[in-house]
Length: 273
Figure (cartoon, helix red, strand yellow):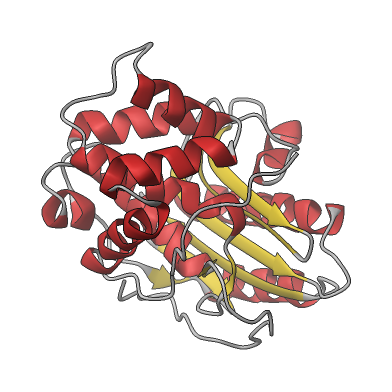
């Protein structure tokens, strides 16, 4: 594992990109191979939307005995929840965890707290309709969205980092949740590699052949997010991008995510490649 440290040049570029967004944005980036990164408004809490399905998946795998078998009920629900962001599947998995969506949410919250992530709250199921860091993380602008599921760019990036480390039997998730095995980590990464979504962080692939993005997005009318792992020939970095606009979040959020990934890749290629 590498220690995180701020890259002033990358941090400045990320701050400029986030502040240019027509609303409120939160960004966190860290190289998982070199440690350098940057952030802006990374501890601000945003409506979480479907990004927290990643946390549900981690809680289910920590409790499930072994990788869900292909064709099994849990396996099918996991695939639907992650790759298609299905709300009914997410609710069913929360019920599988603890008997109800509210009790399942508590399991998810407990998992997040066990690895030191405190800006996330699950708050029940989904509507059915068609860590200490060397990179400074704080609140610069807090969206006024009221109560409900919430999380931060730092928390989602940190959870993804924990999943990636756990796949190699390292990190806080493996320590705090012994039931979450390296095989579980690899299985969850595999699911994230098969997400079908409008391009967000993965826009970085358009001009960078060979780059691979594993990510989980989420959106509601006023918020639109993406968090993922970006693999390139020189290493891997994690990125969390959250946006909120009281008038409605749209494709400008997707463009910001793509720009954040491109800025990070360009800088890390120069400093770590």
